[in-house]
Image (tube, rainbow, N blue to C red; front, top):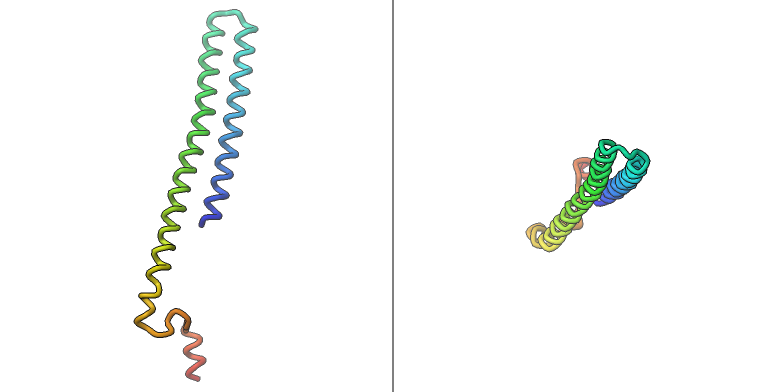
Length: 114
């Protein structure tokens, strides 16, 4: 479970970084267009589009960060569950001698009988 979460996090961060890079590139191109076209309408639209591109890139990174926080919380909960069960397991098995070491499934029971 942790391995799948880690792979997902790597993919999420790679995607977020690629989105951010693309949006920065788009913002720079829109800046160049704004400098080339002296029209106030084109300049205003290019500025608005550049700001939108920068915001989109930032949103992608923030989403990846939020996913990372959730992944870390999941790992903490998983670790606490393992820790609790590790502490509790000996007391559960104390009622049945050899229960922690002996595991008999239906096939082994049938083989032992016959």
